[in-house]
Image (cartoon, rainbow, N blue to C red):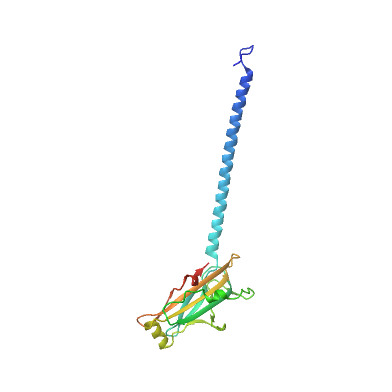
Length: 215
């Protein structure tokens, strides 16, 4: 160190002070950056929590269509859709079929309703929460019957299902809006109709994967 006339090197001291000030500035800047990072992370977490909250509300409050069966006579079943959600559903299309096969399984092929023409959303029906929606039963010629049924009124039909390896299937598709979001919802359902050992009619979910969907 160079000694000045008064015995102290002021230039060197000034350099040391500049280094100390620089280190202090870097420390302050680093602490500020860390604080900003924490604030940003907190804001992101808050936004994520808010989004999850909105999604949870939409899941809870949205419309949701479900299909169930009710007895029709002594052996047959009628299938209808119900809005089990908390908002009104806007149904824009339903395509439903009841088929009988000389075999135990539904053919593993694309459902016929996926080949339908584009949807004209001008035609729709609103279904209130808890409200029922009558499903139409479409035939091979394109005509529709007023209700979707599994007709087991004939003894021969029940015997074929019970003893001879035949099967009956009820399946379909419902397209709708859930009342809260712009997203179009889709329900695909498929039920196998059975006759148990006591001769009573039963049904259960089944069929190829493409026949089952709930969005």
